[in-house]
Length: 137
Image (tube, rainbow, N blue to C red; front, side, top):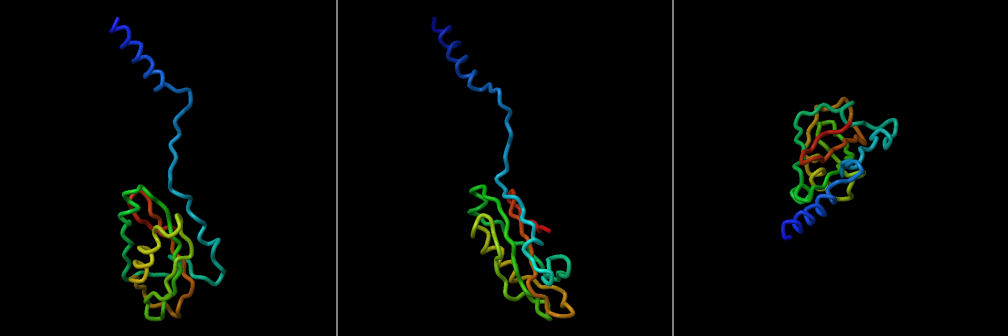
């Protein structure tokens, strides 16, 4: 009798494991923005006119990593005739504010080959995904 009760109980639990629906994993990573869609024709889009001399990607924030959070930031910056970054600001980020501090701090330390003339409104996309930071296009 006890054996029959255990088999019946096991059958109840196992039927909960079976499902007619197919498992479709979903990524919590927000879709990348179309960076050029934010720009004006005279703006500098990162990579097209920028040649890095000193360029370190930001660290993935510990709080975001531990929470499994992912996202991106669009940074706007100017490049002086000396190649130093100026007026670094976050244009947009998802989720709001989570990656802003590390993105801005890293961009303030970037140095580029001195351009023929200062560059204004350069946009750079930083992706924070699966514990890594990469450049977008």
